[in-house]
Image 1 (cartoon, rainbow, N blue to C red):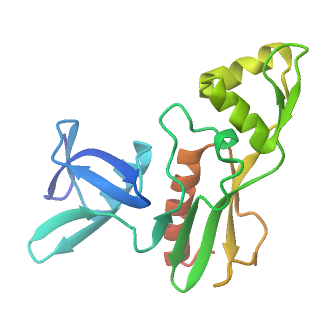
Image 2: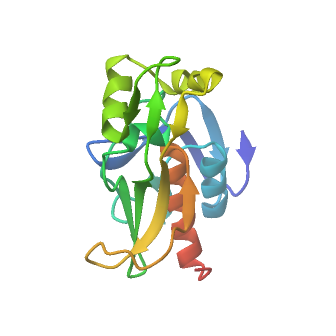
Image 3: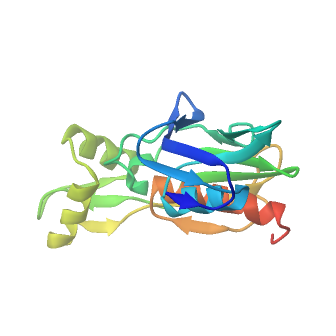
Length: 196
């Protein structure tokens, strides 16, 4: 238990479903007494998902940021975090804050073989082949043992205009889904604080 500012919160987990960000409250995991900043720090340090702290009347709530951050492609599961799995999915999530727009999207080319001296697969074909073999993130790491990777893709955050056209260079370069979502949360804070 952390005693910070007199508001008791019990946070179970934060998750996405059907393109919306949800927060599970009143779990048994950890209890915090916190201010707005402390809640954001706690959530970010625990590698959890997108939530905003809000006081309404005399009650305190953790509420989703779904009006600002929209998840367009749900995470495939806890063992499918690597950017590899999201190669053909287009924009994964968007952020609209202070009249500005940002996307989280995949970039780069995948070229990989799944067996030593085996056939090389590219891009969506590689993702499909890995899925058909029931591979997970840990299996992808093992491909380094025989130098199976020629190239992997990555995720970026980028500023776009209202029509989705790029208006900036890559702001962040990220190798995993969760890190990408967290990058949007941090980007939101930076915009609101006038840092970018």
